[in-house]
Length: 280
Image 1 (tube, helix red, strand yellow):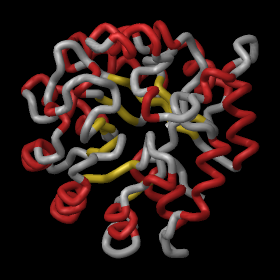
Image 2 (cartoon, one colour; image 1 turned 45 degrees about the horizontal axis):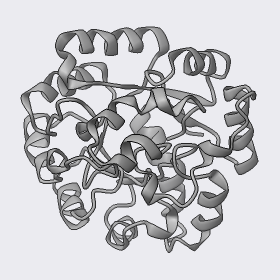
Image 3 (cartoon, helix red, strand yellow; image 1 turned 180 degrees about the vertical axis):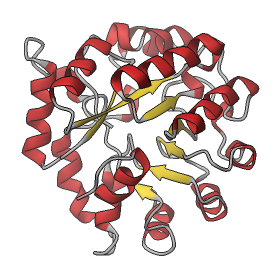
Image 4 (cartoon, helix red, strand yellow; image 1 turned 90 degrees about the horizontal axis):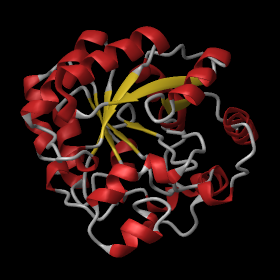
């Protein structure tokens, strides 16, 4: 999970409007800024080419392929996908409140940009939509039809908005109704990580991404699961430049107690398989 530098006022406008505390509405660069010591996006060169900047960071840290949101900045992400198809994979963020118009936009993005994933932020749309709500089902069905995974934010929301729409137990019904859906939990699943592990044991197509977490804060039970029965279920997810620098992530990764044979799955193979990418 990598983003391109862009104006945070435009990127986070909807979440800022949904927040009710003054700090979130007027002071934060990004809605969950209180959770991050230093937001990398605050220090990036505004005049630099965003695609070149991100590629430079990827090269510096040995990151081969990045998953980027086309919907967040179609011009920049579209150029990255066109000019560097081997380095970037596109994702499209869906708002379940948009109904069939939103589904048509997802299909158009898949046809034009070859997007390999959809994403949904249940806490970040207005009104909020629960993981198992009827408005979500057309998105899930279309993902199955297109053969792409859906990445969904689960657990307590970082921004200061309600979180009940992201309770992990809601995934159970979705996986029952869509056994062919590849569902990737994003942004922690806390404080329900024990339940997340239990559901991954139960449902073959349910996965977990470590996005938005500094490696030193990866939940211990998620690491334990990866080291035992979940080696093919846990995949690395970053958060540059939204909340974490690649410098920090890569400096902390060596301290994560994954077994030697788990690392290749965690860093590459699981994501390549889920996103339908070649895996040398």
